[in-house]
Image (cartoon, rainbow, N blue to C red; front, side, top):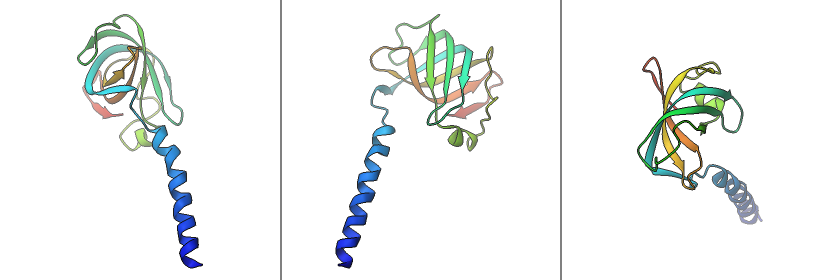
Length: 128
């Protein structure tokens, strides 16, 4: 009976972990070929499960960067909790700030990216 209970509990834990793994997939982004976008912040959404920074791009380089200058980009970053542990606050970036974002651009060419680092105008580089 004890072995059956342990097996059932282990099975339930595995089933519960599957949605978490699916949620954190970055398969829609080209993480193997980083793209760098420099832009002016339009809006910051400090929300769970991921925060977003909306920018107007002034420069796009690397990776799949063929287009996107002058366009609005949606920059996906980690959760506010993760960001706080890496030196961020909800006011680290504000509308009007210029910053450099590096990460994986959407494989379908959309103006969105899964950002891995942000370089602020001050030169400070933060994990995202």
